[in-house]
Image 1: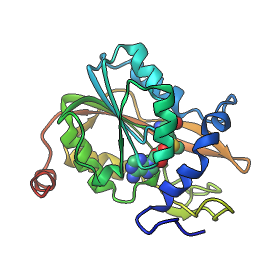
Image 2: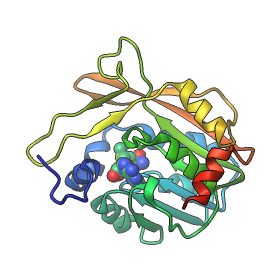
Image 3: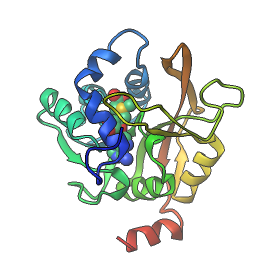
Image 4: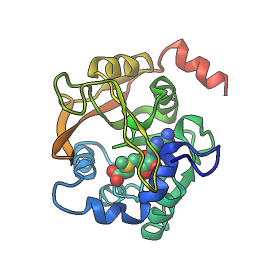
Length: 236
Ligand SMILES: C[S@@+](CC[C@H](N)C(=O)[O-])C[C@H]1O[C@@H](n2cnc3c(N)ncnc32)[C@H](O)[C@@H]1O
């Protein structure tokens, strides 16, 4: 199946198509553990005054932030239907529609915390992602990031990218996987340091009977980053 309009990316069409069943499909125990893992990671961080959720989806990362006392929450998602689902549950949260690596009109210029959970595997240009998130994080701000690691011998995650087959009502989408060392060195280039505990691996969900593994890293913005990041900022 092709996207309905040429400007829509496959991942947008895909999440638009499944938005109405997303919360129901992810509700059973173990069906989608990423929001709970993000909540656990938040628990060891200082209470943020402001937070940006990248790939906010239906808003499953919001309750943890609210419970923690975060007063300013913004989110961005490429799917209008996911944003509509999120808005229905959390009308107080400020939402943006767009592809995060091409977006530049957030309400704040800096956030205390960025949460990007279950989303970076859909982002091809990970350099642009790190340049943007570094620019949006205040000094000593934190980012909770998950990514899909490349795992030799794993039935699904053995290769750096793969595409799902298209279904009757949704298109094929591509998953991009990374090595932890590459993630850490990209982060270091933009002034982000893994903040505490070792990066954590967990089973995020099961696909066709196979465990899908995520890695979660908490970064702290400790420096301004390299000229590469400054160039990105100036070119906007
Ligand atoms: C698996 S869902 C995760 C949603 C939420 N974080 C959760 O844990 O339930 C991935 C979300 O990322 C969004 N997404 C994918 N690529 C994106 C991009 N380039 N910019 C913004 N959102 C994106 C999708 O539309 C989808 O809502």
